[in-house]
Length: 104
Image (cartoon, rainbow, N blue to C red; front, top):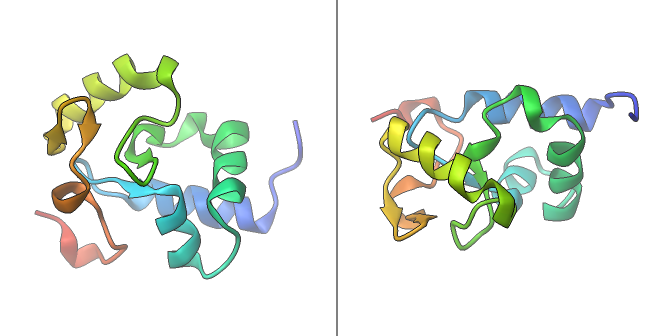
């Protein structure tokens, strides 16, 4: 495994701060950090994301990171009360903008 780099540390720190019931898209994370892009965030999550609430990081349309993660994502989302639209996070209601005051 690649060594953890400063960008990866910032991504993982932000993912740990996403409140239960909220999600961020890969691009949201890159935009919030002001560096990288969705693919770079995805690389971090696929390499080191197992120790953080990875189910809170989704595609821009609210879908799970990978089709084989869908069942586990749905379980976590339902446990946390994440607003859903079918089998996707409802991005209008569930998207977190990175402000801690956004806890509901």
